[in-house]
Length: 296
Length: 313
Image 1 (cartoon, chains in turn brown, yellow):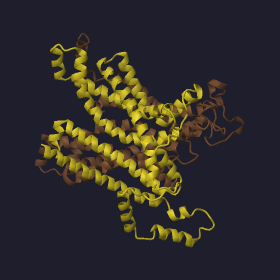
Image 2: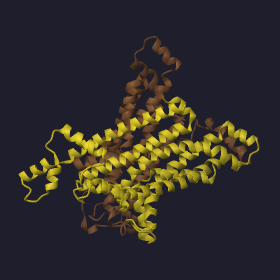
Image 3: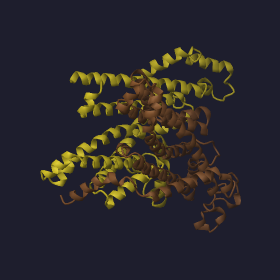
């Protein structure tokens, strides 16, 4: 019983603390890391010390700098003598390209369909939600593997598949919020004076959704990065030969027992970026939309 | 009330059948797009003349109109007949059935790991909010959700097989073979479990009836076990059902990393080998599992929570 008293107090204090969650310092750290990755991706050609495809058989399978002391190849080289650090930077470009297309596309499609479903209800709603159900039942990896079997590995496949499988989350969110909002007094008032549906949705419903959508989009960053890496690892993602983080792990796999770093370093890059993206999502959720906290 | 529930079951069943039907359609058209099965069957032999290919096409009924082929495909699929595997020369469904148990074993072991690790940590983290175990739990959850399973699997192999020599790198055999695949598949879900259990538990602990139970002077353990945990586990059960789908999808990756001979590895190898009957059979089987899991979750949820029962239909 003694433990109960301070606990209750802590819970009651929580809502007030949410005004300044974790402090802004942690946010600046997250933004710094993400900014660094975006910068590396955008200026990969300038930032990378070597050409990621350039082979150098003499210096193949070199260890990272803390083993060799050679700053020319900070993270060592692979079995063809390609510089791991440079490949890592170019890999960031692939990850960021996928993120930059998939998330806005899924967000746009999902939000529009979710708003429509929640506003129209009835047949339209049932139809859209049925599509969502089909996607839940059909594993995305299967679709990606099937598609790759048709066309060969292509980054555009990954982008298409991930968009198709991520819009549903936005649709569900937008639909649920729209349904809960549509009977509010101010919406009823807008309807009474004859405002058209699109105007009500755009002016009165959408602004209430923006925060939740931003949070969801941020939380999906990690999902997209990991999914792209997994598909590239399986050989159904990025084109063969392109330095995606996932395919770097796949290429290093055969040398796992002798050159651990070839697998370790690109994997660690994925973990760090995904971790920071998730932390940033949590931070934003607590800051912008405390209600969502419970639903995760 | 009872009639109400039966009607609900019927409606959900109907919806599931519809979803399965759509999956069948997708599979039919997607695997048609991969290539001409007759050419693949004929192989690269010089003897595979144009007439030879034409003969196979005729025999397989590939020259029939599309809607006839589609109808035949659906009709056969209902009877679990997807044709004969090009590689094993057995009925495709038999190939899949022989692999099913391995995947189920893997998924079950992963599920047990996820629940066995995730729920206790989540509960403890909520009870001892802000303590070391809470921090530890949240840290584990964050790492678990940021680590791609294929990489985690390789790291485990490096640590336990290459460096320490404790566990086999892959394949199926005795008990030791399933440890790493199950842990790898289960970690991501264990992480989700920790977060979910923790937040559900915190919410329940904050409620009035817990305060009542406390004021009655019940022991803390009794309160947690009888009043808090039961209600907190409710959303956890729902999510479990949704996990089944993700787990089966995830097993494709895990099975390729650990050479675990399940349906996932079969899908992978049959797509590489352009073995359409097996691809179709395994994709349909996989999708059915997910559909059934979703259905069961829906129904149990509705049955357990009277509020949902009233609200639906």
